Length: 180
Image 1: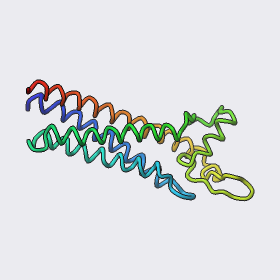
Image 2: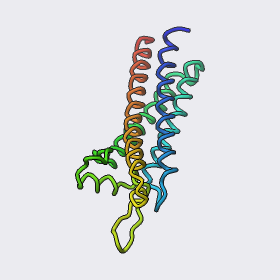
Image 3: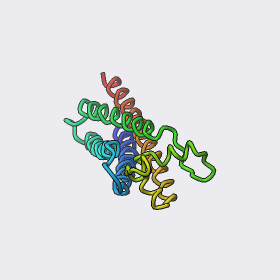
């Protein structure tokens, strides 16, 4: 197998791995959402993970099938790149720099953590309290910390997928330029 094929395949393997992680974490966060409406962010992140995995498979196939080669790959990779950047930014924005450790956290950051719909498993509004975090109400603080870490990891892996796509795009561009 020539280096022309193996380098993109290696990148596609990493892309597929990162996409599986993003999808798995998003599904875990969705399954752990217990109260109220499911945040659209989680559905979007799961879709980004699934599309990234599909793009990795198409990209790997493009290394072996001529008609799928450069042009289709560039379009697919560009769309998936933008989706991963958007998803990573969206998740990071929703987290707003939240600290995932409850121990030693100040009150302001604690409130920010348990008011986050993605992390707390859903918020139920009641007359007694303007918000009621599902896992806080259950006194399940380990789950709050775990969901926080999973959310941060989801954002990170979307950015890593974007880096893989940029690397793959750069290699494709260099290969296309060299061919002409």
